[in-house]
Image (cartoon, rainbow, N blue to C red; front, top):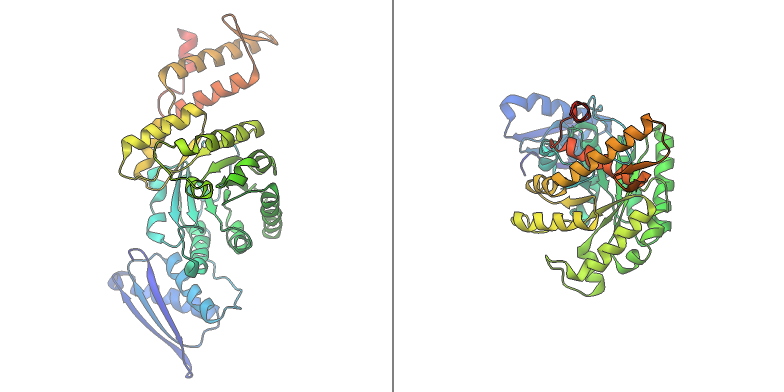
Length: 394
C-alpha cells in the first residue's frame, strides 16, 4: 500500500543479516532505509536473518514499526520497543473544554491516511485500534500508532486514540499513553466501572512515564445498557470530558435498522445528550455513514446542533468542512451572544452582582454559553477579534 511497506523476516543458521530492499524510492532513500533497518535489527539482537523489505514510499517511523512487528511475531516474548525521537513541537498539553466539532477517524494500521490528516483541520484526529483493525493486525496497528504519535504533526488537532475493549485495551494503553496522547476513546462502555478501570491504568502509566499532563477520556455509548447508565458513565471520572454515540452497534443491539433520518435512535441520542449535559461534559453525535452525501451530512449536523450536540464524528476528510459549517453559529446567535457578553462586562465594571439584558436576568450558564458562541464565531472566521473595541466605538 502507498506509504507503507511489507517486511518478511526469516531466521537462518549462518551468521549475518542478508537484507534485500525493493523500494520505489531506492535511488533517493535506499541507503537511509537500509541503515534504519540494520539499526532496528541490531537493537533487537538479530544477527542471523534474511530480510526482505518491499517498500511503497513508507516514512522511517512506519518502516521501523513494520520491522519491529516482524521481530515480535517471531519472538512474542520480546518486550523492548524501538523508539525514534519525538518530533519537536507535537506534544503540547491537552485542553479539557476545547472545541470538538469534528473528530476524524483514521484506521490505525494504515499510515498513508495519518501523514496529512492535520492539513484537513479537524478538531481532533482519532487513531483507531478497534473496529477498523482486523484481529490479526492488532499488534501491528498498536506499534504503528505508537510511532505515529511520536512523529506525525497533526497541526494542532487533538491527539486521540480509540482503544479496544478491555482486557485487550490494556495493551493499547501501555503503548500509547507514554506518547503524550491527549484523549482516549473507550468503545462500547456500559458501566461506570469500565471507565474507572481505564482511568486507573492511565494514571499508573502516566506516573511510570513521568507524564504530568492530563489524559482525557471519551466513553462511547453503543448499547441500550450503556444508554441507561449514561449519566453514571459521564460522572465516573473527572477525566471524562465528553460522551460520544455509536449507532451501528446500538441499532443492532435494539434490533433496529439504522436509517439516515435516525428515528430509531432519537430517544437514545436525547438520553445521552441529557446525561452529558447533566454531568457537565460535551455531547458528541455519531458519524454520518454516507461519505458522498454532503447535503444529507449537513442536514444531520444541523439537526445535531439543534438538539444540543457539540460535535460529530467524521469518517472522511471531505466531511470536516461540512461539519464545521453546520456547527457554526447563525448570525442571530452571534448578535445575541455579543449583547450578553457586553452586558456582563458592563455589570462587572460597575460592580453589579446582577446582570440584565433588557428585562431579562442573565445567569452564569447563559454567559458561559454566549462566550462559547463568541469563541466559535472567532474560530470560524465569522467575527473579528477586535469586536469588543468596535462595539465600544459604536
